[in-house]
Image (tube, one colour):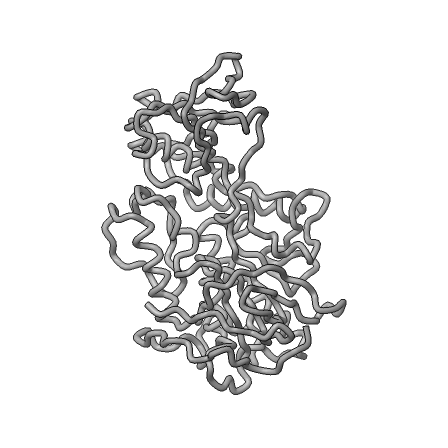
Length: 422
């Protein structure tokens, strides 16, 4: 598989693009699909654009797959928590016993190539800032591959690169090993040890069950977990997403959708509960050299503390925009940052689920193109139509035929379009 390499952009210039997408996980690829579908083309494809709008997709990973590249091998497709098809291309038939780390990156990579999305990687974005005070001015996206000047930015950086580590008294004194689920590889690494698992989410209970076959375990959470006997029906799912959406609309830090939906009893988890593995304890009060001091005052000896404490949105590169409010979060209007129509966050808050990411990709693209159309006096950046008028059908400049494969990138640092002063 050949992936376009990052462009070499001179330090004093920037590549112009109508839209820059940051991140190529499920949300970023969904945005790319809809950008192509509505007539935009990659800004650095080496061809003539004939007046078409342009986009760039930047991804920090060395290859396709987003966070799925880093999942533990024991996470099988049968136990993945609901993966929805990318828009326009169903997942292939797969063995449910296959590791998700093999299946999903391959699916994402095939998707990128068949739709000719032109993802540039590896490119790490350092910052996004406004070029001036003009509300219709460009946003400068600075990266280790140079600077891109965008009329709008879709941020789809997810959470995997920002694991959340709580701080507890005595944490630095622990003689054993501490790791986050982002660093987890396999249960066999803990054979014969005692592992304290911290957290009440899906990863916590999945790894508890897995580790309990080779080690002894203790499970601690801040709150009593809520269990459900059946999966959510569509209406219950919509209500759960609406609760998360209401928080971000108020400018509060988002809750994960799972924190609202609760945990589902799977057969392997019921079996683990019968073995006592899922006997939950209140959170410990401090960490000591040989273990953790439990809420009842007893010392639970431990060799390992596994922090299954979730992730936070990876948005550090957006700090120059000063988006966070007094509530600790970013006030959102759907996928758009409230009051900033040039910036959309997808895979954030209610769109952090895979089905939510697909829908958010489309919403962000349609709203951005309608905004650019309004700025340009009604001319759509893709093909002269309003995105809201034509958002349900492909255009003549949509994805190319599925059979064509990406070629090695011939750009050699050539800039497409006019250069602007940094």
